[in-house]
Image (tube, rainbow, N blue to C red; front, side, top):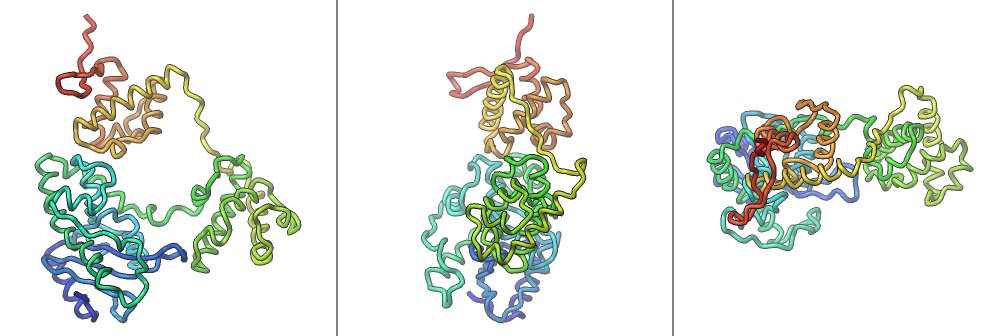
Length: 391
């Protein structure tokens, strides 16, 4: 079960290159550190299932060499956090990813179905539960932990086969591949430093000057958390960052009067934080970030948005697609705003481009323009579209 030498790992990854795919799952702890603590690696190649202990002496380099290899499909389930860790260790943007959770959402399994739920629904097998929140850093691992861990990759490749067949049958494989490309976007793993303020709760309550200061504070906190390998909010809480950005203190005494800012943290970070406030205040007015405040919608536009949302859900249900995958609520709202202004540009609306445009976009525009209407079909038991007869 365990691969205990680097040579064994290298041979298995050679087999993965030949097979052109690798099932992979990671167990990790991220609550106490900035960088997630990798605790266990589980891999599937062909019929082989193995565990690799990253806390031992095995070098993970042969696995990491496949992260950016476009010739080997990496099969994961809900893999965003796993891929974040692999990207950080490999120093390469992941390529050729197949996420079984995302693929399932294109086939009527629902949005964000669990691994066990998909194994049961797709393969008819029930998995044992109970180890997902265990301490994976403890050694030795129990037999129950090892069984749970190996099951996490046991069915990845069979699911890949099943879902690929269904996607090809329904002519949706290209749609899914389009969706998987987001995993190949470097910004997913390394957001621009000037946008880190968006990770701070309540950033939207600040004025432009406060936002400008928060940009500098958030960049400083990120660097400090990374350097000390601590979670962001254990360095300085979001509430304190927002309060500093709002009040723009100029002296230690000002910080000491802030609620929730402990004296030990003021002693450690106070001068550095005041420096960041100065940097933010020095940013020219025309370079300060501004949040786009959407004007309140008219009652008529709100009604149209609700109808369009119902239309999108009806289309999604008819196509066996998870509605949140197709379009988000704020995207519907933006489409209505653009249409009412006569400024609909397909390139600016995700729902009008790619596979979404094919399946949903044209119908939404037909609905908005009054070419079709949405009716309840009592026989089919679902909403249906009907052309509007203007004669």
